[in-house]
Image (cartoon, rainbow, N blue to C red):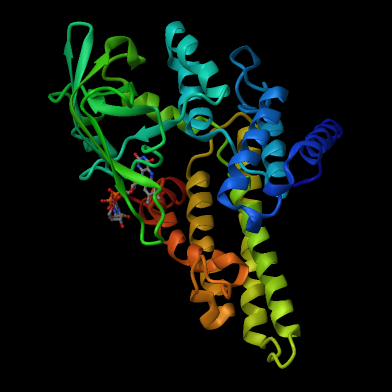
Length: 391
Ligand SMILES: Cc1cc2nc3c(=O)[nH]c(=O)nc-3n(C[C@H](O)[C@H](O)[C@H](O)COP(=O)(O)OP(=O)(O)OC[C@H]3O[C@@H](n4cnc5c(N)ncnc54)[C@H](O)[C@@H]3O)c2cc1C
């Protein structure tokens, strides 16, 4: 396999790099300088630089305000953004619901929502999981019952990332309780300010407010907010799988994490009176570096499948499984390396690397659950990749 860019790709990469060099605010270049206030102001500048260039939604067609990038251009773009540690500004609007509306939305829905997403006015959350329905999502119980020009929504979503900031939610609800479970589900767009919507925070063990539970009590959703046909929502939701799935950003950020750890270990060992690095520590760091490289190669494999016009299947599960478990191992190595100091949390002046590893040690626990658990991904690899029989 030839990993080198074609001349066109190299020219495009140089353009992206030059843009980032010229436009990425200094405050966003160093992960450790991300103080809340600086980040807010710098993020606004970064967002408007991307918007002016038409690169908020690089993979959307130009007619919808996107960059019109090919799969490869999108990959190169993501790779360069990750190399520069440039934050993503698109969120679920750009990554998830925008592409769904482009493919399945009515003209009215496109008109109403797409420019708001690229303009940064609409923040979306994803209402799929419910207390009894995560891995087995098709068993979801939230009900939507047609009443004239509206649907009436009752039920509960859980683990809804960003629901406390979002002004819109795309959600799946059951519209035909008598149909086989995959065939009675529809997708809706919900204005989060609708009467009857209640958002309750859920705080993670890393003390982050990422997700929430959301309750619906007789919420009225206009029928024009149904996406695609009634009872076809499951298939529309699954179409999300067709977009860039390599997640090269995560692979590169893993490499950055390892190089930050190596720098930390070097500096710590060079301090007066500090013990030299042991062979075991060196080996562990080397293992993490190899894993970061493997994550990159798996991302390349996924993108090469997409480049051929095919849809990655079990390869996307391999990718997700590998990098989520590797991110946990990197966090463990970091904490081990830092000894007792590693456990100091944000706010302590003695916390190494701004307490990043104390935080990621706790925060990465959920990475093997979010967006498909490791067990479920192993099932996909076993049955579709290795063609083992279902038990
Ligand atoms: C940080 C984070 C953010 C999230 N954000 C969102 C969001 O924005 N929107 C949203 O809708 N959801 C979100 N989720 C929910 C996420 O999609 C679910 O947690 C995930 O799908 C697992 O479902 P569950 O929690 O119900 O666990 P369950 O499905 O109940 O699984 C429990 C255990 O059983 C195992 N298991 C289940 N089925 C099988 C099987 N067939 N074979 C073997 N083992 C199995 C699982 O691996 C797991 O260990 C988020 C979750 C996290 C952790």
